[in-house]
Length: 142
View 1 (cartoon, rainbow, N blue to C red):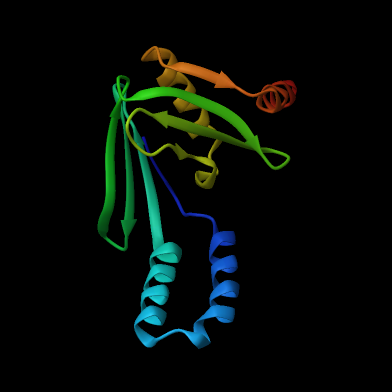
View 2 (view 1 turned 90 degrees about the vertical axis):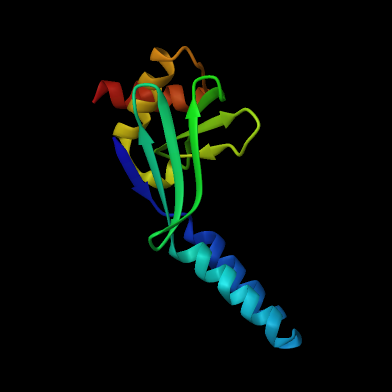
């Protein structure tokens, strides 16, 4: 199944505040470069496709794919499940020889379950933090 999400907007807000303080003293080429970087940060979308034998992680800017990685069980060290904030579950896929990625920005409980099933089926190490175990226990009682 394919899931879509967007990056955090908190990064954008901090960059805008910092750039307002820095931009007046910089040249126009640097200002345009910073503006283009801000556009990419705000307008990108992330797609994660889970199949029975691999994960496909894509970052797109409009319709153009900027980054694409297909991960099999050999490329994944472990999947670490944790908590962000009070009630948001997160999973971080730890990759051998590449960038690790988290899935909190997808806001999908089903994605977390599918990642856990994927790890069990493909014999990938799973690590769950104490906070995550508390969330699992809380939601299983509802």
